[in-house]
Image (tube, helix red, strand yellow):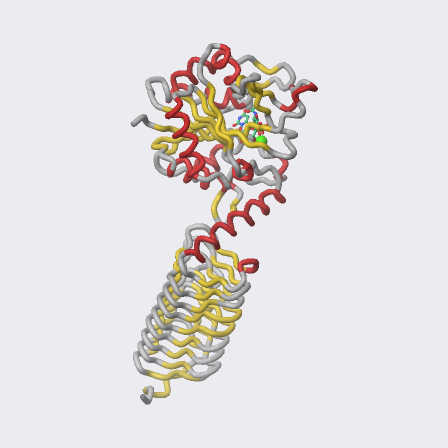
Length: 419
Ligand code: UD1
Ligand code: CA
C-alpha cells in the first residue's frame, strides 16, 4: 500500500473574518476549524501532514499535534507557491499527497478516502474533487474536452465568456502522485492578473504532458465550503452541530429539541440519557448512561458526570466530576468540584470556587446532602452522608466530617445526622 501524506494550506490572512484570531483557529463547535481538517486527513490515512502557515504562524503552529509539521510561507505568492514550500520534505517520497485548505471544517474523511481510492484505482497523476453547483461564481471551473476528459482548471477571474456557463467547480481538494506533483510545480508561471502562482495550473500542465487527470464529483458540495466570514462560520457550525446531534440520536441518546441543544465536538454521552431543551454541552464533557439533563443546563469543559444522574433547570457545571445517582435539580453552580455517588445538591447551591486570585476545590462525599441555598466557599470538604442546612455558608477551608450536620452563617456543626 502506498503511503499518503497531506498538505493543508493555511497561510492566508482571512481578512474578511475581521478578527485578530487567524482564520483557521476560529472555533466551530468548540474546536478550531483547522483541527477538523487535520482529523479528516488523519482518518483518511495521512501519516504525516504539513500545514503551510504564514499569517500569525506561531499561533497556528501551537495547535498542531503529533505527525503534523508546520511549514512557513513568508510571502503569500499563491496556492502553488504554498505547496512548493513543502517540496523539501517530499523529495524521496514515493506515495500520494492530498492537498486541501485549512478553512473547510465540513469536509468528511469518507470523501477524502473515496478520492484517494479513485486516484489509486485509476492510476491518475492528479485527481480533483469537483462539484456541480447552481452558482459557481468565485470558484475555479473544470474545463473538459468534448469527450469529457478534464484538461484544466480556469480561475473565475480568467474565464473566457464561453466558459462562464460551466457549473462544475474545483472544490479545492486534490490527490497527487507525489513524483508528478514535484515535477510539475516548478513549471507553474505567475498568473499575470493576480501576480500569484496558481496550484490549479498544475492540472493543465500535467494534461499537456499526457499525465492522467481524474476527477471525482461530490454530491455534497457543502463539504468543500471554505469559510471566509463570521456569518459563514456560524452556518458551518450549524451544520456540524446537526451532524453531532444526529450521531448521538443514532446511538440512543434522546434529544427533545435538537434546535435548542448545543453539543460540541468530542463530547461523550451514554445510552438512555435524556437531554431536554436549551442545553449547552461544551467540548470533551463526558455524561454517563440514563441521565436526565436540562432544560437550561450548561456543562463546561473538564466535566464528567456518572450514570443515572439528574442535572436539571438553570444549572452550570464546570471542571467537575459528579458520581452515579446524584441529583442537582434546580438552579445551581458547581465549579472545580468532585462529588461522590448519591449526592443531593439542593436548589440554589453555589460553590464559591474563585477567591479573586485562584480557583479552589470542593469535595462532596458519597451520600452528602447539600441543603438549598448552601454556599460552599472553596476549598471545602463535605464528608460522606454529611448534611448542610438551608442557607448554610460553609466557610473557606472548613471540613464537615462524615455524617455530621452543619447549619447557619457561618456554618456551625450541630451534631450527627439521624438516619
Ligand atoms: C482556490 C482555487 C479555486 C477553487 C477554490 C476553492 C487556486 C488558484 N484556486 O481559490 O480553483 O475553486 O480555491 O475554494 O488555487 N493560501 C496559502 N498561501 C497562499 C495563497 C493561499 O496558504 O499564498 C491558502 C489560503 O489560506 C486558503 C487556500 O490557500 O486556505 C486557498 O487560497 P485562496 O486564495 O482562498 O484561493 P481561492 O481564490 O479560494
Ligand atoms: Ca478561498
